[in-house]
Length: 457
Ligand code: BES
Ligand code: MN
Ligand code: MN
Image (tube, rainbow, N blue to C red; front, side, top):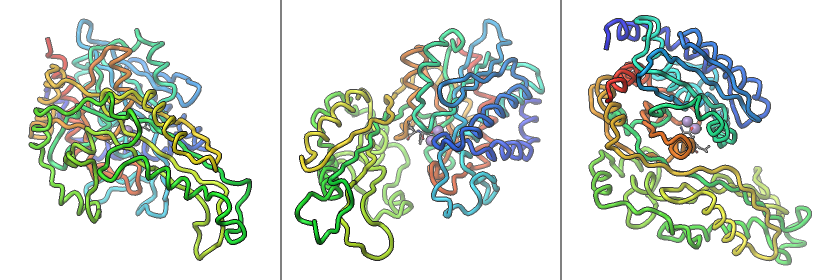
């Protein structure tokens, strides 16, 4: 890679951090209607920054929800075209009391930048902005054509993205998709992610009576919806961690022996992992390692549970309603719609007649798995080695980025997932952070990556 590009990156570490702080100061929380204006302001900030760093075109596209940012630099005719995807929206910050410094006042502490969105995903998006800027402000050109697609609804299920992609196939035509929205396997172990889990998300509402009741006056005579719900939820998994929804495993592609052997090679220490989590004992599906359970096997989880009196002290009350948020993480080749139907049928089946049941389907998305012999994946491996001084390990992640399957299905494009998060970055949680060494090395690796892509036959 040309010296001026590297020099540009290496001499601007502090400037880059200051710039990133201004991006992180915009509370672009997509889930909360009161932040809709901030989400838009963030899209505009990205557009303006993309023009400033030298992209030929950057614009805001309206959707029925939050806007989509598109930008391009197409000055390498006949060259490869990269489609970069990222999201500029962030998760809500609650519980706010647990933040050591305010979530939208990015603060450097212990070699990391603490703020909501620092790792997921603004910091990782910005890493590419800076790698692009390094080329455009020094040699004045990129080694590849570059298209950028930034979404403001990733954290709420990407409701309007598939439609945008399907109706802009020509605009988005490319050779490969590049995404930085995942984590490294651990500190010092750079990684390429080749698999993501899918998702199917539900809300369950039960009603047992038209009002809360005195539990002495009425208890024993009508069903308690909290108990009914608890009873139903315990029927989702058995004691060996297997999901009890009939048909749930029908389409699951089992791990091959070769894949399981690869999993065993990864430096994963179950005891240390449990200790770091503060988990007294690990639990999961019998017959699989923890790493397999959290990345390559499906699961069903209660995300939230609400009913009755939860304040201080005691109140003798029989709640009228109970609510649970339940989601399933899926693996290839489970289909979110079909799994949703199976879940719905099972829940209706096990719900007692004594409660009124309402089921709401929230969002979903397909799992994804790449083939590792793809030349773009190999090229990314070389770039990561350049930036981090070590060749990457290949990992699957348990989280979901539903659009990756869409890129494959609608545009026929492979994706390369190169993330610089760390497993303890606390994404979606209080005190989210971005490791600043990873950020700096990630900019170098990204710049190298564009060059490596340009050399593919
Ligand atoms: N960046 C994450 C996905 C992720 C998390 C990948 C951890 C690898 C490791 C993304 O922003 C995210 O949170 N996705 C949601 C998807 C959902 C809202 C449709 C998820 O996984 O819960
Ligand atoms: Mn993300
Ligand atoms: Mn996220």
